Amino acid sequence: MIRVRGLTKRYGPIMAVRDLSFEVRPGEVLGFLGPNGAGKTTTLRILGGFLPPSAGEAAVAGHDLTRASIPARRATGYLPENFAAPPELRVGEYLRFRAGLKGLGGRARRRRCAEVAELLGFGDRLRQPFAALSKGFRQRVGLADALLADPPALLLDEPFGGLDPLQRVEFRAFLLRLAHDQEKAVLFSSHVLPEVGQVADRILVLDRGRMLACGSRGELLARLEQAPRLRLRLAGGAAAGLAAALPEAFPGLTVLAAEADGLLLRLADAGQVSALFRWLAGRPEEVVAFQPEEPDLEELFRVLVAGGGEEAA
Image (cartoon, rainbow, N blue to C red; front, side):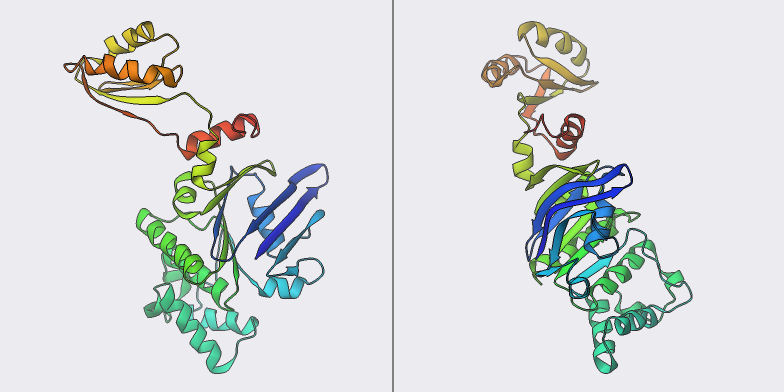
């Protein structure tokens, strides 16, 4: 549905996007994960038809963005990072105006505006001015705008920015419903790690315009070649003594974090696990509980960005 091959964007000597290649299939959510300045917005703007690429090619629904830009743009719904509408305009008026620009007229235009408003849960706010809406409802209107022409592909730039926790949960549900129920190809960008991990079927890690990794959450975490980790919950006052004793008893073991009631340990290798478990089990007066600590996306992201993707390869 969305296909990118060797996409590159230069601004003079600055390389904003470097030889980027990926695909987003119908019914799939692909999350762009990267720090500010990674090239996420530039890539989305190229795919939305707002910027020409310096090199490479991209297609949406089989339409090449360079040779068939108009049908490619018609196949795409775009939500910019800072979506805004005229503050005095009523929501329904704005949507009808935008639907008209997208070729909908008469009863079909009113019907489609009502459909997307109901789908996104603001059907009762169509008569309100845009200025009266909360950030969460403004984002819903922006997504509704992107959906008016029922495009098969959606490009969403930082769609969770500025939303409170409840609004983020609701917006996640909208995106998953659009992809999995309506078979839309959804590409969204974010620098918020938990949101990407909870929504995306696959994650593309981008930094300084380069793709560092791409895959499902499980596939990416499996690339972290690291020693086992263990989190201990301890009785009061036991942390300091164990933090000193454990590295002596188990050469190569590292105390990564120490708190009043717990420790986070990194073992030298998997061979230490069973011996350490026996050692801890023999100290019930000090050790309340212990469990393996799984790697997370935040750690993966740090490793990839610090090493340019090499450490996790």
